[in-house]
Image (cartoon, rainbow, N blue to C red; front, side):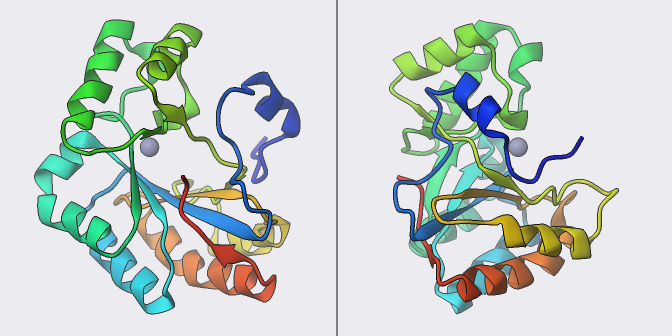
Length: 202
Ligand SMILES: [Zn+2]
């Protein structure tokens, strides 16, 4: 079963994570897994043209690889968040190693926002992340732009479900490039028709 909207039951199970934004008249675009050397520059230009600020959950090793693109992200007024150093899956990573990966990424960016890769982290990892003063940010609407079994039309159709307060999950990685670049302009058009404003996660 593929959910575009995250069921409320799942949100309530992990009640201490941030699922939605504060403003019910806004939506919060988020882009994971960057910076990438081709997709991210395209995305930054596009968002700039649309006058939209978003939140980028960056992988530490990618920030190290493309510091100029990361810098541009911040210059364009976007918010950044920690997405671990090597995109580790919490459930498959030793707690100490997981924390080290987050700290290593923290050394590269100044942020309290954290998004676990795959949305997965163990209870103990979550406890430690909270102790570090981090805010674990999830999403309420997932574009599934990394999924090669779905097409642009499906994503655009599911954008009808987007409502105020939603945190929207997209990616800026090679894997999701084609689908994200095709559907994002249309999804943004639908959001604008709903008279919702774009804000960054705080
Ligand atoms: Zn990711």
